[in-house]
Image (cartoon, rainbow, N blue to C red; front, top):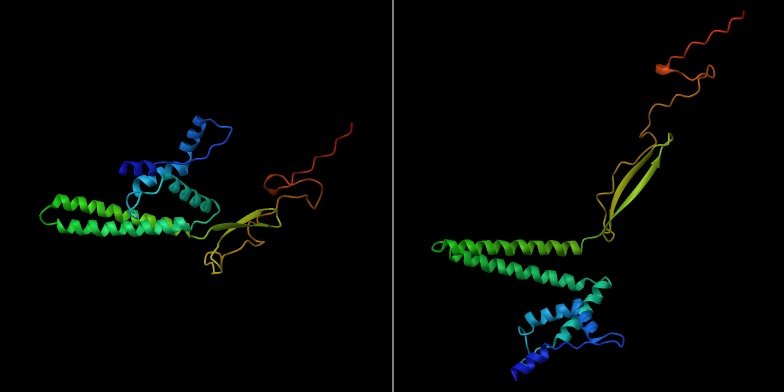
Length: 217
């Protein structure tokens, strides 16, 4: 009876189309992420929590993963937020238990205490990393706004400002910042036409001497 319930739990019901063969259908199903992860999920969690009856089939796991995937594709990351928060708490619980066991073995069994201590620190590090991922998930997005100022001389100055989506809160990074003015980037004017004549100034600003008139024979 138990083997029959196990076979039922491991059964995956799939729909096939008229244009695909059995081999094509099997390849499509086995490459589908929901089917593969549903199988793995049912293996690890299928016998952990039961209601006294047979475990849920793999098909139900795949359907649930498909529903979560559709929510994520639509931009709803509530499931990811809940999962990361739960994982952080679980890892912190592992840290405290492993640290307690390290303390119990500290005096007489130093090697065991060292192993428990290393495992405790790994759990603590993973819990912190999970919390950082959770904070990044809810972190407001950043936008860069570029202001281009063109001076009278034709030189363009680009000033970048970063704006955060803070839900109406003041942005401390983008206020009280200097802006480009007309004096920025100004330099000496380029040599222009000589006011005293049509001859352009030579090197060093010295006007070349006039050529003498041609002598007549």
